Length: 296
Image (cartoon, rainbow, N blue to C red):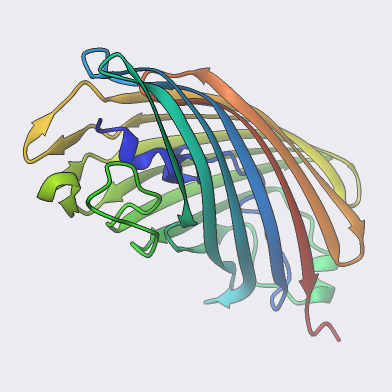
């Protein structure tokens, strides 16, 4: 039961993220708007002692994302806003009887602030054109606000009715046409004081890491092999816990293609490498992005 409340949220992001090039810089003053859709289908693994088995889910998460590149104390930086919308069907057996549920609505609003610590100062367009990246180190803070659809009379919700915070550090090493990304971070959660049945739900931090190997085929076209691992997230309801420690990993592939000067397509596929508790999903995502600026 403890895992159910987070199914929609984790299908979209949180510890399951696979995002290559998250700390790659861009010139100051660029705006980027994207629309994405991610389809997640697969089995769900719960505490073996619980009342739910043979569970499957089909969840589609669409997101509208806005990114702005900034000058943060002479370092390159980005501000990102994300508004998700989820539609999902879950099926399984509850206490031995078939059961199904459908949900749709807005997810929790996300804000990410990222900035470079080493290797990528804030740059104008001419400076960026001459920039030769090598080793870069960045940091970020992601915040998720409890704005998603939530009803405490339902066990399964799209919103989580709590705040979530993720500090992260990333390293990028560029070697000609190759690049390696490595990130380490952790999600921290406030309590949900209005959980199902008037209870309070608490969750331990989830520690996460990501690794990406990218190759640049030509200007505007690159691909990446992706992998991640996350651990933790045990939850309690009014002080009572279950066997819901998460120790999971995903692998995937991402392709990014600049189809025109200001337009970009990105394709991402991933699947569970191993899953102890949570969603062992196959994911397929497609996004379209448009960029603009006041370039002189």
